[in-house]
Length: 334
Ligand SMILES: NC(=O)c1ccc[n+]([C@@H]2O[C@H](COP(=O)([O-])OP(=O)(O)OC[C@H]3O[C@@H](n4cnc5c(N)ncnc54)[C@H](OP(=O)(O)O)[C@@H]3O)[C@@H](O)[C@H]2O)c1
Image 1 (cartoon, rainbow, N blue to C red):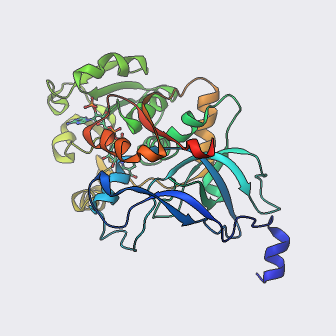
Image 2 (cartoon, rainbow, N blue to C red; image 1 turned 135 degrees about the vertical axis):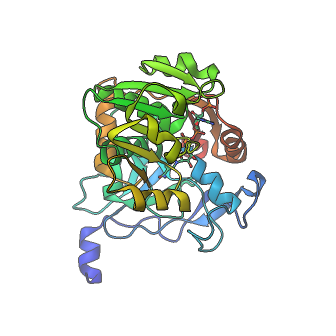
């Protein structure tokens, strides 16, 4: 597309060249490497939105990148702005976009480097969704990455069907709490696993039965499941096979070599194992928002921090949340 066409189709890029505040880090390390810095406002490309970020949330991937655990997968350079979850207001869009300036939105950022903990973030239109007035920015920030992971794991990888039995291993955290509710929405019998202190929480999400991983090993159970969703990445496919029904699916969130081998070697078998990687999708966000509107997807917030206290938020999730999501608010933009 030539420059004229681009300009005709875009709203003015009013923020180009301006500086914004961001949380960034210049080298790998513990949470203390994150600091507030001035950063160029992202330049929105054709097909993208520029969002004024009001809230975000922390996912384990954020601290894994920050520590350098995945530098082989995502090399690039520094500085880096962490975060994939965005809730905020559209400030720039294409003229023919389905989004308008002023729309309240949530987005799962599609840039591999993240970029949510900043005054502004850019993402492709197709990775964002409008949110209803009834949804708080905090709830909207909690949903994108974790909710998408839960939905895609059960629907796309697990091929979930009404009446099936589903086991969620790691049911009380960010992904697990959404997975339990989504599986219940699909009309499944849901068993939840977490530490004993989260029994009541998991049952309140709709789980039919609870296992305490500190006391029970589900692989020794007499039960069998159609879907075993290993959210926590702590289970083993080979040990879990005995409690997986024929035609059943074991889904892991751990994209390591073992997981990749499991995916390749077991796909033709009647009991298959797959490692999943969440893919940003506005359609999936809209599906999650629909469940929220129906009262079928509640958001539990473990703790709240401001962007300036991102280091504390990372420490909180690294140490293990009590339950639900860790949310960050950008008070400078509020
Ligand atoms: N592949 C992908 O695209 C993708 C996407 C999102 C997340 N993930 C991965 O998924 C994992 C979970 O993410 P999250 O956001 O849900 O994390 P989280 O909020 O920290 O939750 C972790 C959950 O695991 C449970 N847990 C801890 N130890 C366990 C054990 N030994 N057995 C069973 N459950 C155990 C916790 O229960 P208690 O608190 O009761 O101990 C909690 O319910 C992370 O490793 C993350 O990196 C991958």
